[in-house]
Image (cartoon, rainbow, N blue to C red; front, side, top):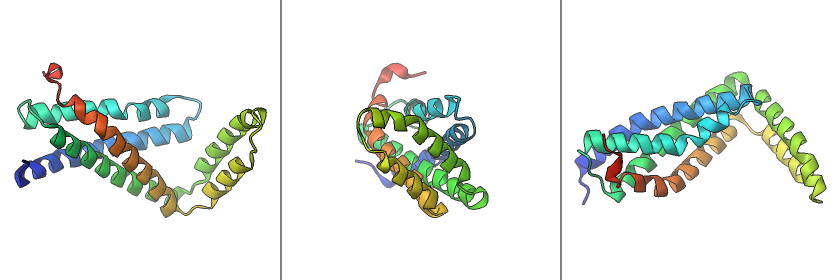
Amino acid sequence: MINSQSLRQAQAFARQDGALLGLLWCIAFASSLYMPQSSIGGLLTLATPIFMIWRLIVFRNYALEGKISYRRAFYYCVSAFFYAALLFGLLLFIYFVTLGNTQLVALFHATLQAIAPIYQQHGIDTKVLNDAQTLVATMSPLNLAFLFATYGLVAGWFASIFIAIFGLFKRWTH
């Protein structure tokens, strides 16, 4: 049974690690947006589960003396992803309000131009791609930020199911 002190402890660590994860996502987003030819943004995004496994193990070893239940590990991971998505959404909202979404729309347009021939080669209508580009271009800063934050939250919840398992393994102790 998890008591309220355990929940507060997990929340405190999840807030800190969620802030770090949110910053990682912001760096990945900026890298993808301003250096689209580089794979740094994609690699940083793919590093999310590895980062969370590392932070979960640090939480387990530092705060819990090397012992954690799956339920507490899952709770910690979901909470960290929640705080990361909250911070990421807030920072994206500020970015989109101040600088606009022209860079994002340009990247989206370039990506769609690159994949349109593949769609046409397989006989798929590219009208869907054009509609998606129009939709992204007309979305408000709040909608865009909410979209990215929601994606991070849902993907994080799903990833937490698997990431929490790594907290159970004793092999990765210091």
